[in-house]
Every structure is written in C-alpha cells, then in structure tokens.
Amino acid sequence: MSAVETGLARTPLHDLHLELGARMVPFAGYSMPVQYPAGVLKEHQHTRSAAGLFDVSHMGQVRLDGAQAAAALETLVPVDVLGLPAGRQRYAVFTNDAGGILDDLMIVNAGDHLFLVVNAACKAQDLAHLRARLEPAVTVTELADRALLALQGPAAAEVFLRLAPAAAGMKFMDFRTLEVAGIPGFASRSGYTGEDGFEISVPAARAVELARALLAEPEVAPIGLGARDSLRLEAGLCLYGHELDPTTTPIEAAIGWAIQKVRRTGGARAGGFPGADTILAQFDAGTARLRAGLAGSTRAPVREGAPLLDAGGREVGCVTSGSFGPSAGQPVAMAYVETASAAPGTELSALVRGRPVPMTVTTMPFVPQRYHRG
Image (cartoon, rainbow, N blue to C red; front, top):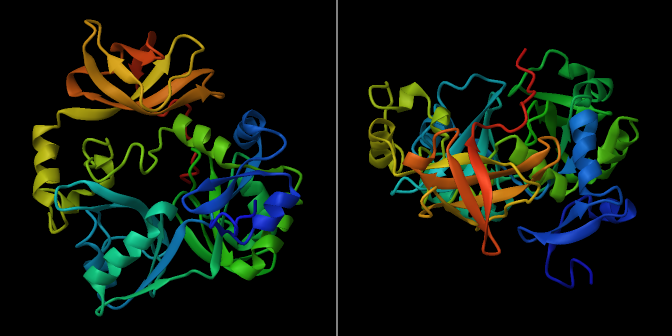
C-alpha cells in the first residue's frame, strides 16, 4: 500500500528510499525508512565506524523574522536566545505553564533571522504556539519546501569537506550557509547519534541530488530509523514522547544544563518563560524523580514500559527507552526513577514478561560522544 493510500506524508527522498530497498514504516505521520537491506545492526555499526546518511526531512524547519525575534522567543523557552552568537546553534525546549516540555528543538542565530528545527510529531502544534505567542511582532514562516539530511559518523567531516569546502573550520554547533555538491543550503555541525556530523538543509527539489552525491562517497551508507534510535539511546539523548513530554520538567529530565545561568534565579533575565516558577524552584529543591541511565548485566534487552523495582521489590520507576546497545555491548535503557534510586551504582530490577532482569543505574552517555568541539 502506498504512502498516499495510507494517508502518510512523504519526504522528498521517499522514492530514493524505495530504490535503495528500504522497509518503510509510519512515523510521525510520514512514511519513513526503518532499515535498509543491510539491517539495523550493520547500519548502527557503520555509523559508528564510517558515515551514515539519515533522512530527517520530516522534522519541521521554521524561520523567525523581526527585530525582536530573539527576545520574543525567550518568552517561550528557558534558554539564552539573546546571547546566542550569529552562526551558532543551541538546544532548547518549549515549556508549558506547569513547567512541562511541549517539545525540544534547535535554535540557530542565522544573522538576520532565527532558524528553528522542531520535532515532526510536534511541528503543527509548535507552529500554532509560535504564531499565537509571537505574531505579529515576529513573522513565523514554515520552510515546508526544504529537506533535511544528517551525515553522521567519524568519517562525516572528511566526506562533507570534499563536497562543501566552505565548511572548513566549523566546530560542534556551528551553523553556516554554504554549497554542498554545488547545491545551495545551510548546515550545522550537529546530530542525534553522539558522533561528529552535519545536518544539512537544502531545497526539497535538490534533496535527491544531494543524497546521491553523499551516497556516492565510499564511506557513506543509508541509515534508517531503527539504527537512529539505538544510536541516540547509546548517546543518552532524549526522544520526545519517551523521555520528554508535557508532564516532565527539564530538571526531571536531567537537561537543566540547557538552561543558561542568565535565565536562572539571580540571572539578568531570570524566568519570564512558561513554568518558570516550578522549574527554577526545582533547581534549588530538587525533584521527586529523575531521568537515569540503566545498564544490564545479562543479554536481555529491557523495553519501554518495563516497571523498575528496588532491592526490596518496591516499584520505583519505569523504562522510557531501551534496547541492546550494539556499541555498548550490553542492554541499555533510560528511565524515570525516584530520586533516591537514581544514584549511579544503584541496583534495580526491570520486570520483563513478569521476570526480574537486573539493571544498574549508570552515568550517560553509554558510549562516549565524539562531537568536534574544536
């Protein structure tokens, strides 16, 4: 059954995925490749050892224009937008009045405007949120005519520089307007795998051309959603709808590092964002639960939804993401657990089909991140 027949949207690379033998699945309203013939394990390992190409065109790309765009955006996110230098990118979250997370996103200072990348499943609500809160002082434009590709892995920089020499000197979270294989676009040195890499935005009409140019490089292979998930999990990166949701605060999610000091209590622009009272109080008082990493001592993977028990058999948490980590060499998971059970080294048991599986709370990432920080 085609994507049209099932009511799913298609990215500009849809036909190329089919040509490459991808198995397509529904994801965030799109028909997306979950894996190619090589399989999830080999795709994961290839990204860790060489360079993987991901289609992330389902993500939302948004442009904000207006002299007050940065100040206005600070009323919706608890991060320092005004202090973000031109040509730099910053991770952020939209919060609600209770301090919960509506979505996580990337913010770029593109010089004469702000550029945002938001999650596919949230982009309609994010656009409505931005327009309701920021317009007419700020013009909110969805860049629906653009594709987004991610090149990730230890060979990504070498490959990218062959096709985009103007990227020389970029470091982690840098953003630059440039040409890639002769195609005008812009790129950030970032990604969702824990590896060095680039996320590249180009006109949708040129996306297949760019993908073919990148795949023609010997180090590059196409990678699907399956490996993308195992890679981000090993890197300790949150997935919206799993680790992040409207009932979870940034402090509970252990992403308080994303809230710069200038927006915290005592900072020059403290508060002023939805849920500020709750979130800033949690910086000082702590929270009843925390996101934690878990490593297994057996080969049995622990999946989302598995309850977690302490040594006394009391339920103290629940797994939000989990699988066997190919690079970690063991089962890995993320979970929310009671703060008293969140210290590294704490022994817990996950219930898998009614049987306890031993897990140990551990620091994240499970596999060292290899961002190019310059």
